[in-house]
Image (spheres, one colour):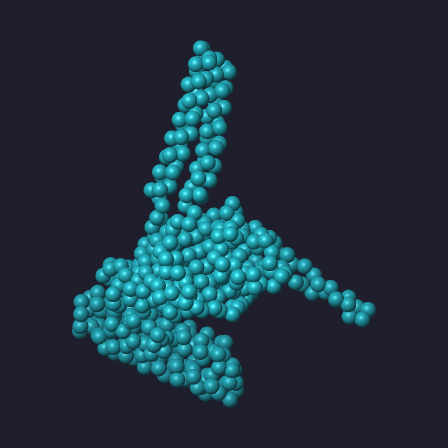
Length: 466
């Protein structure tokens, strides 16, 4: 079982990533311990509201040979396959090149030595230029295919330029490596000139940073066709909710009608008192109907799966993977023993009263095999914590200190700490548990600190199907 990775994504979001094999079955549980002082509860942030606004799922083909893009001549040759084959193969090349470039750039930036940094950067630049030349060697003459090629070529050229500029901006600077830096700058200039010569973008678009960035985002989505799966989300309890609402309404109406009939028999004539009594009865019905329905519905749906994602191949429309989702606030007594043990390992000052939010995702791979060159798919789940900080105090204050006879002060920010316990399990009775400390303020996630992980083989398989 490959372990799930948890990494910060943007200022107020983090991302879970895990790989799955054909017909693999896996369960992922997240238990959020949210301090009461953050103001998060079922009344301020409902499960449905948080799911639809802040939890995003993504699934795509994945290769562990991420440093060597899967390049075959048929991927970018116009001579073989149907039009849809050419587009999907071209997009596979583009996607894998982008993923490999991202991975290698991150590794290059981790080099502390200036010598190692520029040696890796030059090698990466040479490999990238070689792959771009291979792509451009198969420029199609068919106008129907050339539009696909132009989109991918335009996007990759821009992405390569931006990636190496970012590398140079954040990497070590040394006067001794001016030759190497100039070589990397030359690659960026060449790609910029290449796009101008092919008239890929208008001058108006190039002069506006927002327009060119948004255009490239659109080209990125177009280039992911056939690689990133289409997602459809279904609410699993829609019909059940209608039955509950209808049943509650019917019972309340029967009760109200009984009272009305008794009132009519007590008053032989229509009077002001009768009208006032009927109005009061209908008012009570409207007042309590929604409250009663909500209470009964929360009881009925407790422990039930609420949503399902179906991921399909964009080209063949065949189903590749499904995710069944649970999301609900729970009480401490419903915590599994192992999760409770993890939460009790916190230091005493962190054991404060908190709301517990449970997220579960059961993933099932439906395909028996993937496209040639791919043995796995990668699922990613993005959690945005913006709704969690909505009620936080800005809390900036001053910290005073005494230096001899002089008083100095400095600004301090108010921070909050959540605890997250991740439990990953599969049908082979394998289990992986890890606790994370998430420190946040109103504007960003300050730190995500992983604690010691636990791996054993005692999980019950029936939990996967509950």
